[in-house]
Length: 334
Image (cartoon, rainbow, N blue to C red; front, side, top):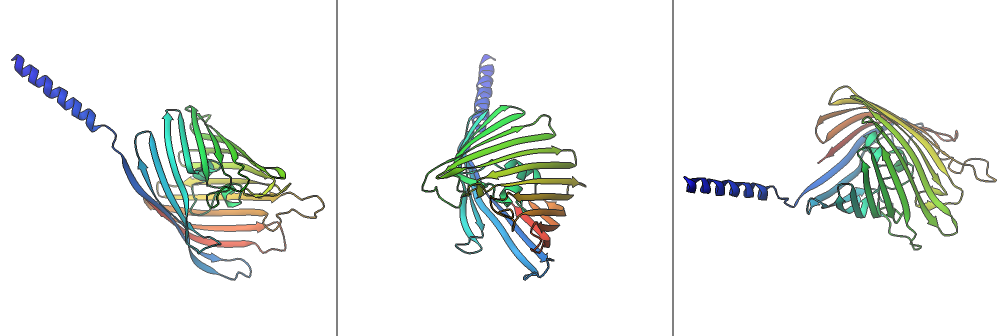
């Protein structure tokens, strides 16, 4: 009887040890892709191209986990390039992530930037239109650098970034001056997200190029509302310094979900620039104005989205014809 109990104990211990071994982490990876396609009709006055099919962007890549704490992701961005073709591939993400602890994560390489990631996710329709800062050149979605993310508490986190400031399509400039950015995200309650972001980059012979933004969003059971205010100082865009050239703007967006498949959305943007000393109008007058986006979306299957939407832009310069287009937009991803 004692032998049987001993054998049974050994068997149970062996099973327990095997179970523990089977739960040990195994390195693994998976491919990913994301494609934005559309057909649109141009209703603008005197439009030269009244309709077109477009493949605006394709993201192709692979993610791999070396361990529970260390992982990597590589993504190629296939899109338009003035120096190449309409489908030139760029290395957009080549990122190594290290979870130092439960509250600290380091990312390095060509990394996804934090400047407008929260807003882009809250807006939720990147395949239809970029978020405000991305659309109007106030920042880049990826850059070469290092980011440290700190989870201070369940409702507060911070990111500190050092990057080359040129974006993922360019190498570090000759001056080698880095961009420093700070993001603070606070959730006062589960449904509300608030965020502040600021960055600065020194420029030879000019004041620093800097960006500042504030965001607040509310997500209910079947709707979400978001609003943001953004500024860029001493630059025509984030990577094009210009003394005293400033941009600022507002963006408001809302979504209502009828059910798990159907939802309606709307967005309003307003972009403006300052008037330089001695000038009679704003320096960015030819691009300043307001944009309206509105439409419906259906998600028939996971990873597949269709949208019928309208996009119009009214220029502050009354001499310019306003843009007015109707789109059928599609996103499919893995």
